[in-house]
Image (cartoon, rainbow, N blue to C red):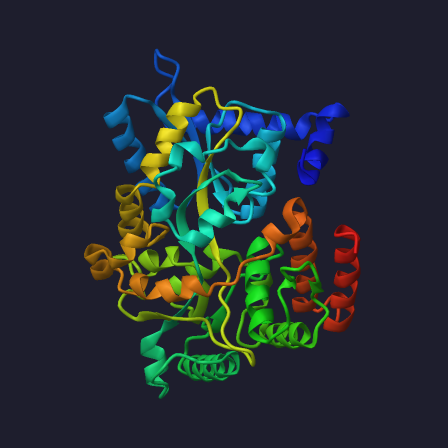
Length: 438
């Protein structure tokens, strides 16, 4: 059993059953509250646990209902925790107990190695289809020769910006570098506050101590030539001049162009502040595009997107995204696999793109005219995907969750002023050497 799973499974061996019981109670409550069908007479209903976002969950429900009509298999939809860190913890409780209560899991791009022992091998079921997907994602999801998850939608971050405010203050283009962003954000923030917009901030981003901060911090670090946490050959790359430079600059944003509370923000806190009209720039994933430009958004029609700014070593955007995987403990593996096939089909991914601005993992959809018409930025993301920065989940395998936790905790200490960059990164280097036995 993988190391991280082993740690969670100790609670059963020691009789410490309360966290697991709480998780199963939550699962039962979720099933009751979703209002979805119960198991049909054939006993082949399928339970799938998904992202709770309002736009995306509505599209997921629509696809599930279509699948039910076409196949006769009933589908239950559960809402997972919004935080990916909390979601992984919940998954590990279910899977560590070999629970059959969830058949299909929505799996982060960084989790296949961590969950390897709990996921079904889908290689034979998707033999003829893998060529249609982004090759990097198929490779990412293949662990020890087993295809453990099927790519559903991919993520790379965008810089969202208020085009109307930039032009008001004489900026015709979005910032090309992080230093330009700092200057532009400060200028617009200062001008708007003088005009009476006291709640306006220059830049919001994901600064809470969780996986989202790992993504932000890795982008800053790589753009400054500071390494990739753990290199492909296994070398630890955190206590570097580029990393210190990047994190020190970000710490300088807190309380100046970014609100003091940004160190408690995840994706939705950023999106809500930006959508309310209280931020000039925002770093976020593509899902936010359909929301900030929605009919009821105060900033609809005023927002544009760009690639993240560059540091001294160039631009860097972390590869994200979600896959669908079948639990090894499912009592309905054939039906669960068919649900995965339907949701990740060309039709399924097109509906996700049109309904929730999710980036497809099927290559052909980047040339789809309907998607291009509704979301012009999506076809332009193809090049960014080819150059996206992968987190070292495949390099460190089952140790990734521990590595990432130490990383974002160290960066958070720098951002909140609890520690200097020099000391925090020196400590982080020592911790990672212990984890990876170097």
